[in-house]
Length: 250
Image 1 (spheres, rainbow, N blue to C red):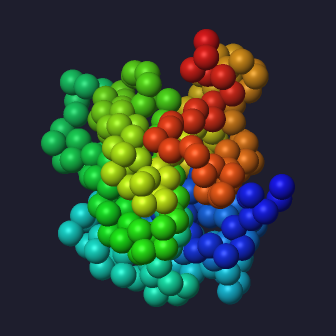
Image 2: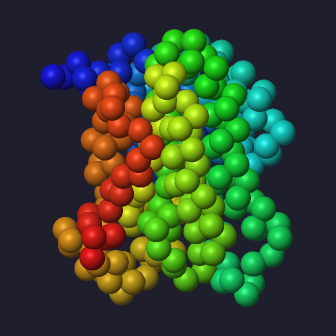
């Protein structure tokens, strides 16, 4: 049974690997046996992550919101271990602007990084997966793929689009052995959600909204993520899996 979840012969790329859930994902894939290339903007944090994992990890510093650089970033990703079998699109940004205050620059940044970059990076890496007839793409959707939140109109639009992008990726590429799915994390304590957890009353309210009665911890993501990256999910594609403690069930 354990061979279903074994990633020992796989190469993975994780964007947003320098912190938060992206880093948790990158750590988990190394622990599952994969060779992992982490991609992020913050050089110091990315270097620290790579150093923690030795020869099984490599890094590429890049700003994925610069869409015209993605093809060159994809080339760099393939250098350390070869073309990836697994792509985890975890990089993201939440500008937290109320609808009436949204400006064009922040709207564009949100859509470029949260929606366009996952597509263009996948597009660049898919040909090698097609040659192998095996690949896994896991996008990071959100509760805001399903529900509206205050000051989340740009982020919600991008993450709603990402849910549909995931289904469209599955339609386009799963016949070639490339499964595309998404995880939709609930409220996890990360740098991206720091404003939420700095408000103790709001944090408690969100925990009470779950069926389990608490907010998420990074380790809660590991099992679902490894499932979607492995042979265990061979007949699962085009799905968005909430990992939210039952938040969306209530």
